[in-house]
Structures are given as structure tokens and as C-alpha cells.
Length: 222
Ligand code: DC
Image 1 (cartoon, rainbow, N blue to C red):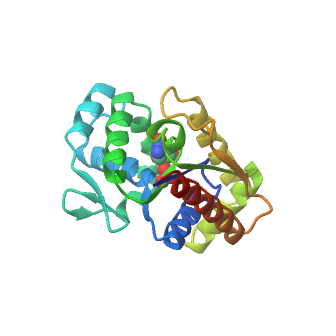
Image 2: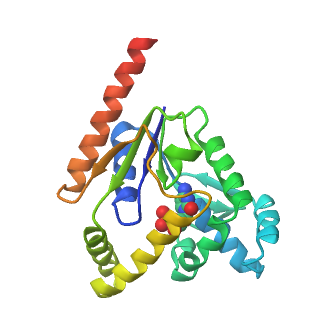
């Protein structure tokens, strides 16, 4: 069974998707990590990031994998290295290229094939897994998302103002919504959860309950 969890940055997707997966004893796929890994490889290679054809060709030859909750480039675990501001800042170059998205979407489908898995991203329910059995779209108000992001950064020792976070977030939201491919949007059949006044545990419980209902429905069809 495939459970997709989509939503904008700061909606709390990633920690919740992790927890949902472990609660259900499903596997977990962080699709942003795959985009980050391809971006890290492109930066390292010195390729011109504005050259879409070159990027498409480059990514088609990369050996990216997702194993043991970690992102791999060839035989190197790059899970930490892909979290730098430089990588975050450069991802949009790759995320905008249709051929790159097609390649990484295909990789995601291969990873998920035949598994019970929770996948987390922006385009999962609407584009990568249109037939997923359970689709969730998490949202929160821009201010709430920025506050959460600010706390997250403070936890890792980086102190920024709410205004700074909001400005960067608005820019990312705009890019995510405007892109021609892989646009952030809820699938028509996704359950939308607005998380503003909810604790992470409440969000997790709601999703786990949704999945359990879905599993029962599927069981009764068999
Ligand atoms: O979830 P994240 O912040 O690690 O994702 C990093 C970037 O990767 C995000 O800004 C957009 C891109 N991305 C994407 O285009 N499609 C996905 N399924 C996941 C991430």
C-alpha cells in the first residue's frame, strides 16, 4: 500500500511522515532527499545549472538510491551533506527540468513498488503515485509554518527572525506553485488536513486512522 503525504515546506510533513510510517510499520521515502542528492552531485560536478539539457543528461546517468532511510550517491551515504543551504538554494534548477522530474519520479516508483510505504513530497499524490491507496495533503498558515521552521532552525543552532523565514518561505511557495512541472497541489482525492491548531501527535493519529480505515476497506474488497 502506498500512502502519500504532500504539502508545502513547514507544514510538518517530514517528521509526521516518519512517525506515521513507523507507527504503521511501513517503510518511508523522503522524495526531497532524492532531489537534494541529484543537486549535490550536480554542484560537485561543476555542471552549468542553468543548462537544462546538460542537467537532464547528467541526472539520467546518476546512481541514486534510497536505503535504510538514507540517501545514497553511488556507495556514499549523503544524507547529511544534502542538507546544506547551498544544496537547498540550487534544487530549483533541477526541480524545474521535466526530464529530471521524470527520472526521479521513475526512481520513486521503483523504490515503492510492491512495498507498504509512506512517501513524502510535493507531487506524490497528484503526479508520481496517482493510484496511491491513501493520499494526504498537509497545510498550515504561512505564519504558523514560518514559526515552526524558525524553531527547527533554532534547534540546530541557527537563529533567524520570523520575517527572514517568511520572506524565504514566500519565495519558495511561489516557486513551488508556479512551476510548470511538479507543481505543489493536492490531488483531487487527497484528504486535506490543516494543522495550525493541531499537535504533531494529533496529525499523526489522524493519518494513521485514515490509513487503517483504508486498509480495512481494501481487506473487505479482497
Ligand atoms: O522536502 P525538501 O525540503 O527536502 O525538498 C527540497 C526541494 O526539492 C523542494 O524545495 C522542492 C524539491 N522537491 C520536488 O520538487 N519534488 C519532490 N517530490 C520533493 C522535493
